[in-house]
Length: 324
Image (cartoon, rainbow, N blue to C red):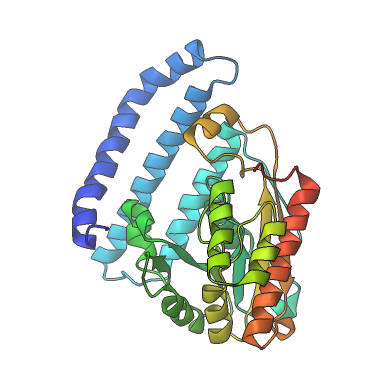
């Protein structure tokens, strides 16, 4: 159970500042040593630089949020500008220091007629930072205002806790009323808004995939369990939140996102071994107009699985299936 907001901000925000100051003080000594003593890939030096960037940029974002609060603008849309600068800064450092390269095929925008419609973005969730990358591209490339469905534990991060709670977002807790919250969030989508949902409900792992399939079998959803078994790279989508969003935002186009390149980095050891990133993170986006989304709930569930199967096929065609 999370501490209440007052406690989180009283304890974790000062801790962020203290740790950032500590990194700033240690960096001039630690970084040259990491360069000299490190091996060819200089992992420690790269991660140390990224830690410095993360701490300083997050601290600046929290201070900017505090300044808006002091000016009685706690619900101001300028929070999107704060998050845009924060995420773009981390993205740039990840490119320079960690070797991040992202290539996107397909587009979310389809000309003038589509640009004034809200979006519901349904993305695969696999690997560290994929949500950050998705939010970055929505903010920077497409000038969308993302509304994100995310785990409540992310509120332990001071910037997310402060900024995200001042903007339309949903934090999901086990046993909570997430579906109702997602429906309310979708009902207020404007023409430049994008509701981001990860239908799998969490980061992909082979074990979570197996548990999800067993859960479908226990619920006697045999057809969905069979289709999920055939998808080797994805967990079965949970339709509840998606259906609530579609019901509440009937004019929204739907964008699906599949990606590869981060999905085998599930532990701290995996991340350590793969820094710097030598491969490209490939993403495939495709957009379905609102008028092409089925109207019936059962048909929508079938349609969601069909799109998820398309994502799984794309992943399989671009890399080896996820290991069992």
